[in-house]
Image (tube, rainbow, N blue to C red; front, side, top):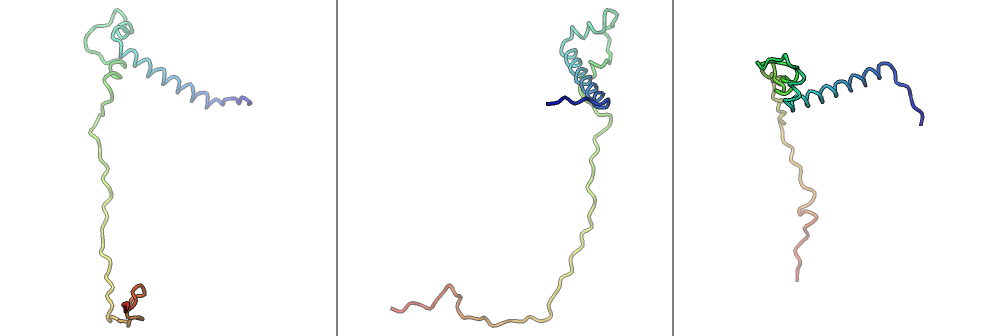
Length: 107
């Protein structure tokens, strides 16, 4: 099997994906461990409310606005015109009894 060379665009895409995965992993670790989170900020960190990336990641996703529901398009229903025959043509049956029923058995 021959190894193929990565193009610059593929290399950039893979590096970006690896960086994003590493960022999510690091945010998860820092959000799960308060001690690591404090060490991340250092000694000059004030324990007052702050909004760093770890806190925002731990809080979860919040939407900035209410969810918008897309309404389906309105459909104007129209009744199909009913075709009415002016005359009814009745045809005489080709047989008096249905083929699956024969005359009664005499015996």
